Image (tube, rainbow, N blue to C red; front, side, top):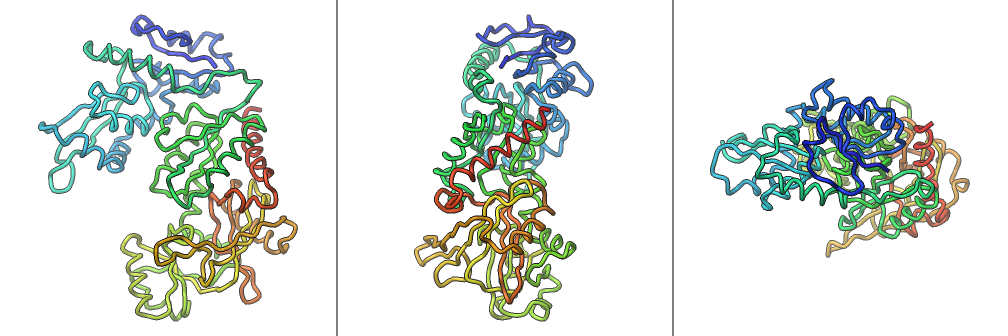
Length: 489
């Protein structure tokens, strides 16, 4: 894969890096030699990324050619939106306050060169902003007093800077940092006969209760290589590298207000094939959306009511007791409580409504197990039974020491599950999309009922893969390959 530095005047880039070609911007735009390159990483150092400028077209045409530009068009657009600077400032607030605590002035300007600053004490903040806005050269402006109470720092703007704007005193650092960056961030250049596409697997081994354990991740890596994908396990610190890949597989529990959603959204904007896609995350992580979706499409589900502060007193009359109260973004039995009386109903629901305008009340449907049907690309991939934890009404319980207690997972062939279960799971999942979903179904009082459709379903080694073994992992990797080949055609 070719690595190109594109700049209006190559003489303005004084650094020679082995294996990196410095290309005049007009040559990259007009010379057929570059338009016919099958694959390339394009580092755009043009003076401006303004709409329809030379720099804008370099990143735009790089994307059209299947090259991987930095900054990407999505980053260029994000850098123009001042609300995104404020959102980034809020998300990184603790780091911003800690990094700028020693500064006495009312304003501060931070220059970021490939995720670093000339002063090491600002490197963590520089890397975090580079991850949010992956562009080689950036300038972030901060002002004091932007927060409530008139104290604290807030980022007011972030924008790209041209190579010609680098201070002379900073140039030795920038050249050294560029040499370091070009030397190690890229995935190894290798013959495309070995692997056809690059796959990023987002995973954090330190977070408990993730959708896959480390042995399962190793199996995904082996399966990817078998079908012709080149996998790399990445973490949330690799946000700025997404453009290096062709596909993203998220193996962390997803939330909307979370780095997993930002990864998904950025990957989709960069043209990657993504599991889970942002739309699926938005839909599946909110129980209020699911309740409305099931009702409007006549999907069998427990009696459900959307609760707000003004109708808590109606829950008992409409749902009855005992009942289950759920946070809209609850997952893996967290944020789900069973209530037996009016007092606990009011107190627990009120507590949930402190963080959200709405909550969910649902009839209690006891069962010894839940059916879990995993759907991929509108077809069943696997089926299992999630048995309840011993002596508990959920599949996960917690003992007096805080240790998690899990029910048994019983994997089976898809054909062994009752036909109405798989049919109902398909109907529900197909309303969400064509990605990877785990549909939970209860059998209660002679009815099959969908409890929820989960994006990012659990696939742990020795559990969900208990029957189909390696075929579970190969099936998901083939999905990525088929989607990538379809886009290529």
